[in-house]
Amino acid sequence: MKQKIIDALKDHAKGHIKKHVTNVEIYLTNPVGVGEHPDVLDAIEKELDMISKYHDHLEVINKYIEKDPLKPNV
Image (cartoon, rainbow, N blue to C red):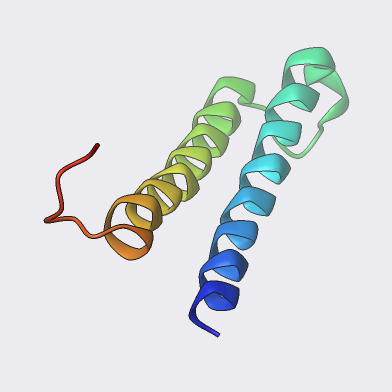
């Protein structure tokens, strides 16, 4: 059960990363077509913040949840 929960947390974070990366790609390829975001650079920065957030979640899961943080890396 523990591994299923960990996998679900990781899948959740990866899904959010994919969503926000896609948004950045849309802004970069068609910035004029996104009418509700007149400041495209600000919108991209917000997406990057979200990517960073979920990337950090994955790093924490990998370092502190899946592995023993006190055990030396081999």
